[in-house]
Image 1 (cartoon, one colour):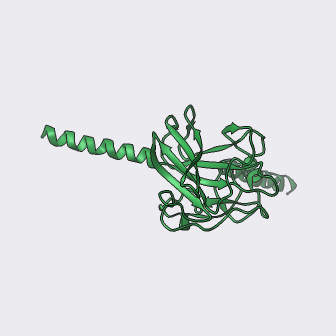
Image 2: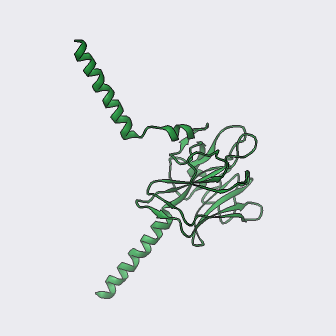
Image 3: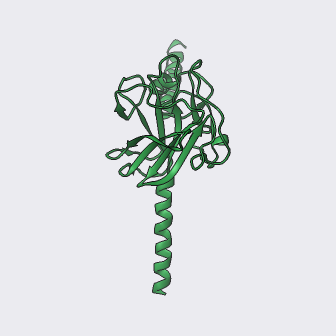
Length: 222
């Protein structure tokens, strides 16, 4: 009986460990902008129900020609709340909601044909996406040939937001630029809207307040 309980406990621990790893995903990538690439970013999303320490987590940027990393970004020292985003960018102040400005350089994300991004937890690969073609070992499911654009303001994002079926082709679409907020299918820079948006509960409260005000004015006029 004791042995059975220990076995069940071990299985639960393994399941919890896997869930913790799988809760963090690569959610949105913008590697190509109009003109010079000065606003590149990678957005991660914590799909879990509790805050997650990023100690031991790292991003590798993958060169499609060699299949190896051309840059490593250590995320240790940070954390991300439940159902929240973590945005990696450079230090030029051009990306809204940036959490980690890790470099002063522009054009730090290669422009594909193909290239990719890989997310590791203590050297274990837990998520990856490649763009403009396949990279063996990093392309999840079917190949995503879609590319970011230097003629339109857009990114590559998971649609619906946070969807992870382990298939790059079906998970990622042309995305309105939304670092640090929910992905929106389409094109255009929606980051200002995301930063200034009124939270839903507050919006409902304001709407209700407005209705009460109109009722009050109507009563006085009558």
